[in-house]
Length: 285
Image (cartoon, rainbow, N blue to C red):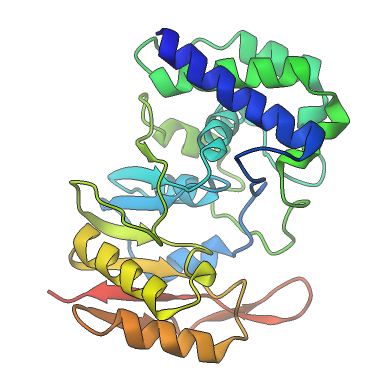
């Protein structure tokens, strides 16, 4: 228990340093997805599937649960995202849609949020969720409200569309009453776990791979982590115009056991730009 408390407090002080001085071993993270997840999830089936999803803003994880995934594990290179997941889970319990333009500054209302978290009843067996409560209580107590925005990269993404927007209670009811499995790992590096998945959500991940070596590592990880017939779901959002880079990515990743499936689907965002929904790498059966 002492180690649990120590880890939670160490991470909390790292988040405080990030907000106050912009010096931390952790980076800011995203308020919400920059994708239209409603359209993305239309292109594959997730019901009763075992899923590994990037954690990030948690929108992908909650969308997987909403659509009936059997089990959802998560990963992220930034450990602060696991604490954000639990914050969003608690707000879902209160039927609070977060984040949106009306409550984007909810962390600035430290006293109200502090009281909500302090009064939570959490199963003592949920170690990570109890760590998250310690993290947020310390963070909110010690961080001036206006500085809390420095936890995030920017304001709410205008492109964001989630399928559970009007079904917060349904999503909360589908969250298992146990800790979510979280791997503090990078899919662009060796990602060795003794488990296989039907679906892997790689929203905004491969955009950070820029050379053949990166793509080779991703290929090996996907080949090892996916069940035969399983799919890794990818997006174009950050580098959607970089066709040369995408061509190299496709050539390297499909060299052995993986094939590509382009989603013949696009949507018009609020800026009237047409955005490609995404694509998938499928492991051959």
